Structures are given as C-alpha cells and as structure tokens.
Amino acid sequence: MIRQIKYFSVDNKILYNIVTYNMNNIKSFEAIDFYQLDDLFSEEHKLVRDSIRQFVNQEIIPNIEEWYEKNHFPTDIVKKMGETGIFGPNTSPDYGGGGLDNISYGLIMQELERGDSGMRSTASVQSSLVMYPIEAYGSEEQKKKYLPKLATGEMLGCFGLTEPDYGSNPGGMISKLEDKGDYFLLNGAKLWISNSPIADIAVVWAKDENKRIKGIIVERGMEGFSTPKTGGKWSLRSSLTGELVFDNVKVPKENLLPNKDGLGAPLGCLDKARYGIAWGALGVAMDCFYHAKKYSLERKQFEKPIASFQLIQKKLAEMLTEITKAQLVCWRLGSLMDKGKVSSAQISLAKRNNVEIALKIAREARQIHGGMGITSDYPMMRHMMNLESVITYEGTHDIHLLILGNEITGIPAFS
Ligand code: TGC
Ligand code: FAD
Image (cartoon, rainbow, N blue to C red; front, side, top):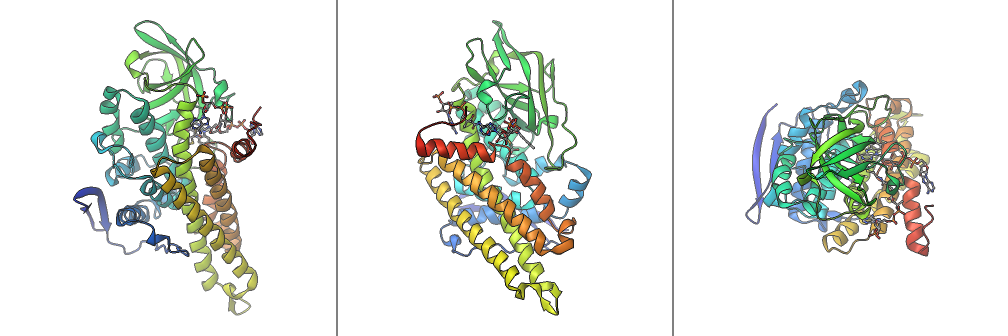
C-alpha cells in the first residue's frame, strides 16, 4: 500500500491532510445524489467529504467487520482521525481546529458513519461533546490546554451526562459538586459513556450546593476517578462504552467550565451532536442503498436479476426517495446552522427522521440480500445493530417526538 500525505488548499488556507492511497483492493462506493445536491456544496465541502470518504475506504471499511466481531476498538484510529482533521472541524484554528462550517462537519459525519456508527460516535463525542463545550463555555487557559491536543488525537475525551437513574431526564441528576475552598469535591456516577474506558479527560455535568448544573473537566489519574467498561453490547461493538465513577474526587477549581451553567449547557452540546447524527444516519442509509442496488443487479433468481422484479424495485425506489428527502433536510439544517438560525426542534426532527429511515433502509437492504444479508460479508446487519443505539442515544426516538410535540403545541409532555 502506498501512503502519502498531501496538503490541499482552498483560498490559500491549508485545509486538511489529505491522505492518498493506492486504491487497489479498496471496496468502491458510489454515492447517490438524485437531486444534484453537489451543485449546492462548495469546493471546500466536496474536498472535505471526498478526503474523509477516502479515509473511511482505507482505514475503516477493510477492517470494521473483524473489529466488530471481536468487539474491538482500534485505539490507533484516534491518532489517525486527528491527523486527517476529523476532530474539531468547527473549532477555531487558533486552538488547532479546522475552522470549517457546519455543512463540512455534517459531511464528515456522513462519511464516517457510512463506515461505522461507532467510528462516528468516537468523532462526534470528541468534536461536539468535548471540544465544543470547552471552546464555548471554557476559560482561555482550558482552551489552550486541551483543544490542540484533542484536535490532533493526542488526547481523547468523553462526555458524562447520563446517570444510572437519569437518562431521558438528565435534569434529575444526582452527581454532586461541592466547593471545598481550594478544590471541588465530586461524587456520583455516570453510565453509558462513549469513549470512557480510554478517555484522557471527561467533561462531566454535576449539581452544585444550589442544585445548579455545572460542567467540569475531570482528568484520568485523579484519585477516586475510575472508568469501568460496559460489556455485553450487541450494538456499537467497535466503540468503547463505560461508566464514570467519582468517589470523593478532588478536582482543581480551574477545571470548572466558567461561562455557562444550567441544563441548557449540556443540552446545547447535544444540539451539535444530534445535528451530526442526522448526517451520520444518512451515511448509513446511503451505504445500505449502494449495497442493495449492486446486489440486486448481480443476483439472479428465476433466471433474471432480482432487480428486475417489481417488489425489489419498490424497495429501491422507496429507499432513494427517503434518502433524497433526508439529504435535503441535512443540507437545509446545515445552512440554517451556519446562519445561526437553527432551532433545537428542527435538529430533533432531523435526528429522529434520519435515524428512523436509515434503520428501515438497513432492514430492507438486508432483505434484498436474502440469507447473505445476515453475514459480515455485507454491512447491513452491523448497521442495523448500531442504529439501535443511535435511535436511543442523544435523546430517544420518543423524546424527540415529544420535543416536536412541545414545539407544535407549546405544552411539554415530558412529565
Ligand atoms: P427544559 O425545562 O425543557 O429545559 C431546561 C433548560 O435547557 C434549555 N434547553 C436547551 N438548551 C439548548 N439546547 C437544547 N436542545 C435545549 N433544550 C432545552 C431550556 O431552554 C432550559 O433553559 P433555562 O435557561 O430556561 O433553564 O428541560 P427538561 O428537564 O424538561 O428536559 C427536556 C428534555 C426531555 C427535552 C431534555 O432533558 C432531553 O433532551 N433529554 C434527553 C437526554 C439526552 O439526550 N441525553 C443524551 C446524553 S449524551 C449522549 O447520548 C451521547 S451519545 C454520543 C455518541 O456516542 O455519539
Ligand atoms: P430511559 O430514559 O430510561 O428511557 C427508557 C424508555 O422510556 C425509552 O423508550 C424512552 O423513550 C422512554 N421514556 C422516557 N421518558 C419518557 C417520557 N417522558 N415519555 C415517554 N417515554 C419516555 N450518555 C452520555 O451522557 N454520554 C455518552 O457518551 C453516551 N453514550 C452512549 C452510548 C451508547 C451505546 C448508549 C446506548 C447510550 C449512551 N448514552 C450516553 C446514554 C443515552 O443518552 C441514554 O441511553 C438515553 O438518553 C436514554 O436514557 P436511558 O437509557 O436511561 O433510557
């Protein structure tokens, strides 16, 4: 394999380390673009998308089925993602980020999740749930200390909001942060935390003495802080998930995120991550459609390609329709976000819709593959299992429905 690093530039700005490869033996992928969305993307968007597509074709697709079967997270992928510019694409270049817009961010998530939802999870936690709150709510010292290392993948972060008894209702959390004068004393536990078993830092949400939710950066190695791994997962098997346990952890005062508190602070990060998931789910749907179309044209039954049967064509036509609608939703959402005009409810609609259609498309694509569809020769079963997490995390499918119900009626039906 030939590997070389090239630097591409647009408007004299160095954009990305584009890694070019000998493409022999790399499975091809043909993206659908039925409504010619490429016309709406800038050269920068296409350059970013194509570079990540290449990264995924080279680094993820050839290995992912084995990692998945072995329930393995390849830790070296973190450095590779950092080198490729996958972490902090929206973060300011002053702190080592890419300085790119939200559509570029979305396209990165689309391509990564086409490879695997767990790989996208690693990246969206790092960018939206760790780098974003440090940049948006952190002090200058925190930004300088953590963001450049997070951008290169020298450091990996995680985000601790969910607790054993407070998942959909994070406002009820009981993790406690007490001001002890020289330091904060942190007690409590977080569950279902992506990246936690190997994360160098955790952005943790806990309540102070006044029951106000605050964000604080906890570093691996602090006494009383542990990160046990969660086993037995049938979903996201190549992403690490675990707990965060705080047993009288003394956290330095300067680790508190000073510039925002209250439940709106973590929920603001979730908006960024949910937006990325809407694009990511689209990547899964596109991958499943690609395989379904290819297989149906190659596979013969009754002496004809199965693609010639009306029932198969119905499935493919419906997949294409839903993917095209979801692409338009993502593009418009990204444009609104870039103009600072997006609402949380608009993001909920996109996350909810796109994950649902991706799950349905994965299931239909699996059926088109008949028995072969259940094997690891094809990605559909893995995508389906992954999407069972994606439809649950970052707000369950029904929580997003209730967010939309609240938006329509003005009446919250959460409790
Ligand atoms: P509510 O009273 O509605 O709101 C409390 C405060 O928050 C503000 N707010 C938001 N701010 C920014 N963005 C949003 N999306 C916001 N939604 C609400 C709101 O304005 C209010 O502010 P203030 O200043 O008035 O206090 O809160 P609630 O307790 O009734 O809850 C509403 C609900 C159910 C929608 C919310 O709790 C929710 O979204 N629950 C779902 C929890 C969730 O999504 N957890 C995700 C954990 S992280 C994760 O899953 C990572 S997976 C990563 C991966 O691997 O990819
Ligand atoms: P619950 O809240 O107990 O919900 C159970 C069921 O009840 C759901 O169907 C839900 O829709 C329904 N329900 C709850 N409330 C209502 C209501 N008011 N009305 C109607 N139905 C309701 N969290 C983090 O903080 N950081 C992470 O990095 C992270 N990574 C994750 C990775 C994985 C693989 C998974 C599976 C989860 C992760 N999570 C993470 C946690 C995730 O956000 C929660 O699982 C999710 O918010 C749901 O919480 P819960 O599992 O406690 O379910």
